[in-house]
Image 1 (tube, rainbow, N blue to C red):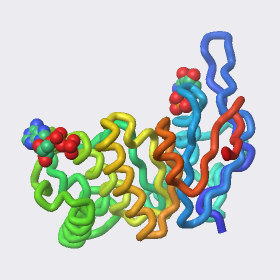
Image 2 (cartoon, protein in one colour; image 1 turned 90 degrees about the horizontal axis):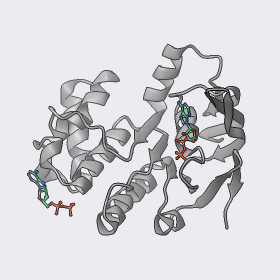
Image 3 (cartoon, protein in one colour; image 1 turned 135 degrees about the horizontal axis):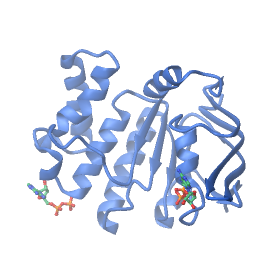
Image 4 (tube, rainbow, N blue to C red; image 1 turned 135 degrees about the vertical axis):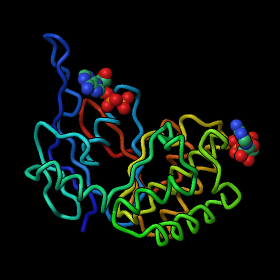
Length: 225
Ligand code: ADP
Ligand code: ADP
């Protein structure tokens, strides 16, 4: 069964009198363990699609199913609960909490999901260790390099053992070498944990390492190569 299904998703914005049809008829299926690159120019609607897939924003038409569960009629609080239990997010800029350590940034979302500090800290340590950040657990985000900040953000995104990882230009802010490292860490985590991932990227080298590539054209999804 699909982890994520987008069925006939439509979304428009208004700009004064003008109507911008950003997503017209988006259909997309992602299965467990599948990694999918979303490659499209700026303004094509990638962020909008990811926000809708991640239940952060509501579509105007169509249905988003998370593990076969339709979400459009759910209340905001039910959508939030489902999102926290099933979906991890990574952004271009890490959005880590500046006054907390790397370890705390990874542990906090798990505590919000009901784990004890002790359990959350253990899992956070394991993840940071896996991402080769053992020597950085006590550092605050401002004391970490860009690549390290983004690896902490990856650890935080997967800490709650989601089924689906959504990433919006996760390496867009990094130099090519660091981008390659961070992406490698992301892929090995996804593969070892059987996580499905939808990753918006401009980086074709990165897109080529994923299972499938799709693009957005005139508000519709098209498969590439
Ligand atoms: P991408 O991520 O591919 O660059 P976005 O989804 O961010 O594309 O944006 C698609 C288009 O929708 C852009 O032209 C953007 O300006 C517009 N847009 C995005 N969000 C809003 C909003 N809240 N209100 C009005 N227009 C928006
Ligand atoms: P990367 O190649 O991963 O981007 P950098 O060359 O930027 O790494 O940083 C090298 C090392 O310096 C990293 O281990 C990082 O933790 C440390 N570092 C970078 N910026 C700071 C800072 N503002 N305060 C303390 N340590 C820093």
